[in-house]
Length: 225
Length: 306
Ligand code: SF4
Image (cartoon, rainbow over all chains, first blue to last red; front, side):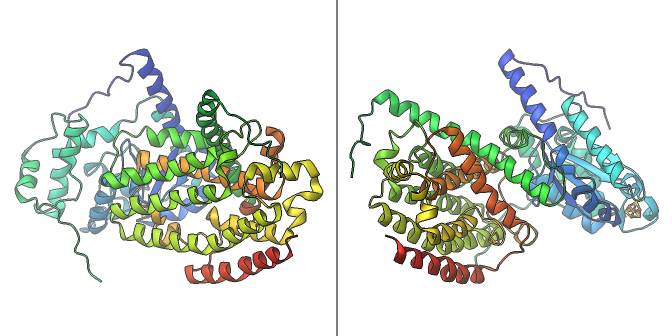
């Protein structure tokens, strides 16, 4: 995978630069988490949220739908069936979005690395901003991970969400390898990339061609009582 | 009845009030959101969010790079949700700015306060998310539930003061001192008002339409970016409107801004203190409860209005 240069934030006139700075500043201090509790690591999240460690003091609070969230928290092993749901969730989130992989299982499969039903490396399927390794990581580790994500966002270094648009072919290819060539999601990632000017060298490729060939247009749901 | 409150108002004054009142309401509302979250955190023995958290949230949401709209009605719904309250703010008399409120009256205000829910219903409808539809139908049912006691209370207060003009109601209370406050004169109405306030703000035990774990925050389920930001702004307005209205009806309004804000913050604290020690009622229980107790207390209050 090619390295993608991080966009230089300090562009445009003074007013827009001030505005960008303000935006970045607020974004780092207000993070809504969507916790996709797949594996055993989820058990360490309640103490992070409640009175012992209280992540709200960092401006991090739990949210319940992908539309509202900024951070997708994957807490543990991801089976192939789960990964489909994770992909749907990830694509519905509004950018800028960040992915945190908690637990060794998201890094390399952990103790499930021999399993036929587990997706081993999370960042083959979506760009991951931060890993918090451990089997399972303690709440202190999660808090310190959140802190370093906040620092990265404030410095403008966490732009991995753009990679998904710019390298969509790579990610789609890996997804197709697992789910088969018929794989499609309701979100039109290529369309979004074109709309927001995020088309990169890797947006189109052989895998997106397959997608365009097999893609069925979305139909409105049938109304039934 | 003294008619001196109907003073001449110049065009520039109207413009200043139209601009300034919503802005003040928004800023005070943000502080109220923080206050509410801080109380919640303290009840749960947490530290709670930092000082500017509500502002960070709103700026961040409006600054999201990708925005997902579900269509024109979705957009209009959010504008209605905010607009209803922005219009309501100009009719809420506050110290030094009564010019427009004098001509509004409490009936108009009551109507305006229903617009946001209806706008939200429109917007959520177009999102076509089943959770959202369930949520909004529950929200409208809840509105039906708490609006009956609300109207009874408004009627009772108007009957007591023999006017529907909010400025007049406040002036009467302020001129005669604490003994003439609504809360002293009509304690039953004030009590029913507290229950209504709890329902209006959608706090536990009356928050079944949000129910994060069951229907994924109901009406908010498909809202992202600026749409959710709009709802956050709406929440700030809502807290301000409900608190200031309660203070105007029962606690003598405010002769100075300090007095008004102090009273309003006390008023918004009450639902929060109650909220965090309660689970929630189901929709039908909620309606039953609202149509029984607050309505009964309210009607009793009306009967004793002198
Ligand atoms: S790393 Fe350990 S605790 Fe985490 S999901 Fe894997 S097996 Fe479970």
